[in-house]
Length: 318
Image (tube, rainbow, N blue to C red; front, side):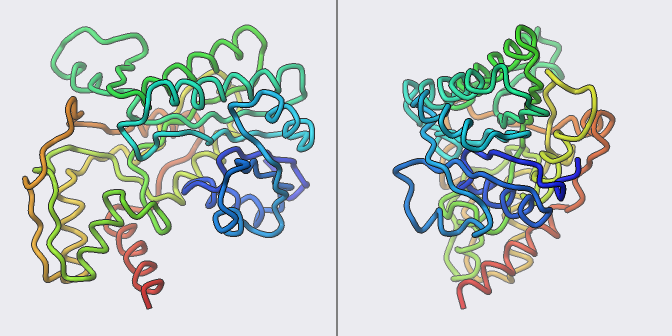
């Protein structure tokens, strides 16, 4: 897609971790970007967005607010990232339902009947839950291989189902992408990778679970490239795409890489914390299928991505 042709883009959740990278990339490519900013959002977070982007007030829980934002932006392409519970597995189920499901429905209702080239809904790898493990153990899978284990993941499954319905019933050109374990500079400080890096750089011990969970770590800039690929590939409307490398690493392995790169003095206290109830032990993307459908593959390996993230955090700390 030729973004430099002043293609109009609406991004919900633009002030979030991935949203900021996506906004910056599209502005650099020459798109006319409208960022949906929650009315209660801090001015500081909105100020982090590129000045070339147009800001529009957007509360996904308010159908009229969503409709006004869509009418103002008149987008050709929409990226829907606005959500609650991304880094909070204990998010209230009622809130997750209102924001992640209700907000998606409000957006799709506002888009029906409009000339839209592509709508990219952003889900999560946690929609799969334990289904990948069930597949290898020979147990019967749930429909579509989805098996959410918390309110956030369940709400994303429901949002995916509504997206499928709007594609089938109304022809909205919807594609769902499911990022895996995203990391990179600027990620919320309380999440795994930045908290481990901070401990390593300050010489602190790092308490963690035993760390045997296997995750498909993907660098944030690769995720953005995958999202852009989802707008360009023909004939993928109604489908879901995994955004990951296809390779799983244990949580402990990722933390040990950080210790090696930084030559950390503190200790990794593996096993100091318990696993979360219902913890899923293996999540890896079907990267081959995404590559066949879009031509996109992740380029940044875990060690290289960690080096970039550590270097940026070191520069910021100075």
